[in-house]
Image (cartoon, rainbow, N blue to C red; front, side, top):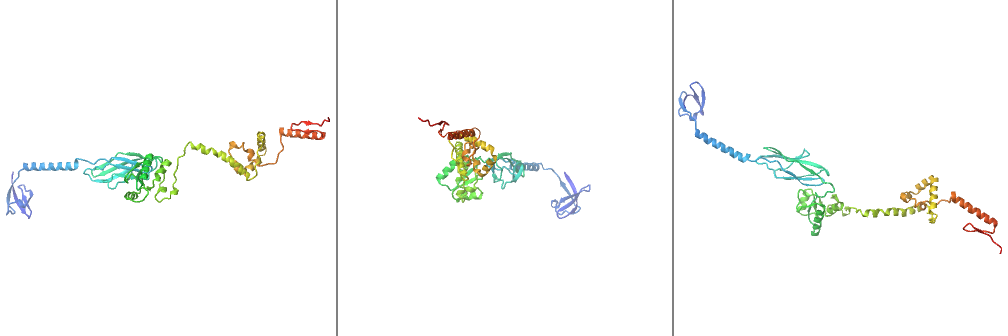
Length: 393
């Protein structure tokens, strides 16, 4: 197509061209022939370049493919969270390396029971974290939230329950400076309680066991605030059947404050408690002797009768019984089932009282027979209440 245009004005960089219908077109003056001035007429031919279009289109498609294969082939993945170890008051969580593809990581947050617990520092490097200060034997739910320039991705929720005090399977021990025999015994003790042995100090190490505070492992344990205890701590946990405090088992702790609790044997229980009534019975008369001397034991044949009399006397004189209980508090410690057997021995001496009922009648009868024998003057009283007179042969 051929177009004729009139040059209206020529500046240093741009020339103003006029069409036949008086339209203005700005045209680069560098493309005009030299020695052009206002009023000159120029012919411009306009045509489409298909070859250049195809070449440019191919170049653009190649650029798009390069961008897609570089940035769009993969996308960020949701974190994969799992529990590494759990104790009575702490949980160690770990996850696979973050797959953020070509996107930029903005933050990685940890949520506990659907509430944000904090951000993970250096999310592209860190792959584990430890949460402390939890409650004993309680269930918690954790999940991770990954924010990137390509979007937000959440991990699956992980349910973790902290251990009971009697569950020692969460203990992870790292041995330090220990003699060979002591290290072997420590390994066996940890296996017996269900714990684990770690050769190096890790994030899930719960206790560092050693007899000397030196070495690289010891320094790392101190830096990570891991309790440094002696081997006796494992023995204390095994003996008590539960996790015990570490304060008494520090390297600088007083050994006399350590209390190793041995579980009681069910067979030995009755044998220990059975001698107690016997000891109390033996001690009761000695405590009574401080106030008044104990009366001599009565004959065996009269014991049931005197026991009945003493019970009758106690019923008739309740005031005296109360005063005796106040004066002799040690007698109250005697067991209730043994009170009747030791009542005579525990009571203080009292003045003789007149017999009653049948015993009183028998005494009066004997006294009357004695008077009769004295009046006659010739008979003697025998134990069987029979009298004999002197007969002149």
